Every structure is written in C-alpha cells, then in structure tokens.
Image 1 (cartoon, one colour):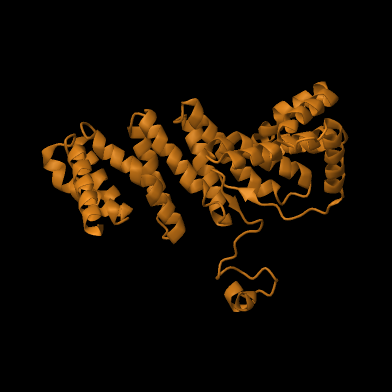
Image 2 (cartoon, one colour; image 1 turned 90 degrees about the vertical axis):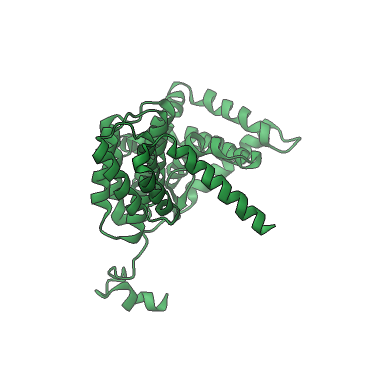
Length: 331
C-alpha cells in the first residue's frame, strides 16, 4: 500500500514538473529541475540563485514560470532567514523588492505577496523583528502592490496585528477595550476562515457581548477612544462604526445588540433576563484588575502576553547576567 502511494506521488510530481517545463525555454530545463529539487529540500536560497540567474540572462522575458517559482519561494526564504537569524534577511528582502518591481502584479502574484505578509506576520512574537516587519508592510502599502480589495484587507490586518503588540501593554488602554479590539479583529479577519459553525458562533457571541459592553463604557471614557484613534488608528478602525452608532443613539444600539444575542441564549431566557446578566458581567469586568492579554498575529494566530526571552538576552530580573546564566537556569 505504501509503495503504491509513493509511486502515485512520484507520478504526480513528475506530471507537475512536465507542466512547468512546457512553459520554460528548453535550454533552462536542467536548471529549473534543479531549482524544483532544491525547493523540495527547502534550500530556498539555492532556488532563488538559480531563478535569478535565468531571469538575468533572459532579461525577465519569456520565463513566467521561473517568476512564479520565485514568487512561491520568497515567503519561505524570508521566514527561514528570520527563524535562523542567519543575517541574510535584509539582503534577501532587497532582492524581493527588486523582483516585485520587475513583475506584473496580477492576481496570482498578489496572492503570493499576501502569503508573504501572512508568513512574516506570524513571526512578530520576536520583538526584535517587529520594526523590520513594520518597514516591510509600509513598503508594500507605499508601492501599491495590492490592488484587490480582499488583499487590501490583509494589509489592514497586518497593521492591526502590529498595533496589538503595543496596546496590550499600554496602561492607557483598558482591559475592556483590549477585549473588544480582539473580538472585533476576530470578526473582521478570522471568523470567515473558521469552518466549524460552533467556533463561528462563539466568535459572534464574543463580538456582540463586547459591543454591548462598549455601549455602556463609551460615554464615560471618550478620552480613551480619542487616544486609541491617535495611537492605534488601524485598530480603532475596527470599532469606528460601532462608536458612531453609540454616539447617535446608545440605547437603540445596545437594544439591537441584545436582539442579536437572543439567537444564542438558552430556550426560555427572556430579553430582560439576558440584559440583567449582561449588566452583571459588565460590572464584574470593570471591577477586575487588568489581566494578561494575548495579542494576535494575523490569521487567528495568538501569542503570549510578554516578549520571548532569548537565551543570550539580558535577564529581566536586572542582574546584568545573560538569561541562560541566571533565571534561565532555574527555568
């Protein structure tokens, strides 16, 4: 059985390669096959070197399949650079920028660029990398590579993800607002990707509950939202429509949210009882001390609430020693 599966996989691989080679000048077949071999072995730097050599010889003309291979491996190459801390990230990123400027940004190429955004967004747990990712996102926006609406949404998601790493530790942003931002992020960017109805329902309930809490919270804390809009504009945008509705008619908006929540409550529960429970939950939330808050890194990825400590970083206890020589030993 395993032997048959291996044969089928081999035939499928050979067929895919034949399809690629149909669109590549014959003189480059050997190089392209070699590049595909390196791709399977995850030696992406070697794939890039071969593809760039071909593009240089052909001045980028008539080798669209080679460009597709490059677009496919760049997100993996850059991610590998960061994960391995191999000092090649800046060089490879510069090559990537040159590549992006040299191609037609059709739908397929935009999809690969979005994949790069998502893969690199997931690395923001490393605090040292966040400024580099910020530069990358700003460059993509300034160049206007992503023209389709759904890809623009991914760009907004990347900005909101970056901001979450700042505001989760910002004492000027309350826990209630942080929770509301997280729920709004889920609703805007991850809910539609969830295949399980139960998970979607949980996200919907969470979002509606936090919306209702904000209806009660906003009037007495407008300055906090002015601060949020100034310091974290992409995150504030997730709440902007709700806040406008609250400004127009807070009671009407809160009542409408309760109506939406009634769909998810136990049979026999009245709207009055639901409102009573919501008020109690809101009061309990206000009374709680600020708790650790998990931030998000795009595509529903969540991370710890403190920066990851490297073995060679200074120990956070203030001893002046490296972490591995101090508290890291006990850890």
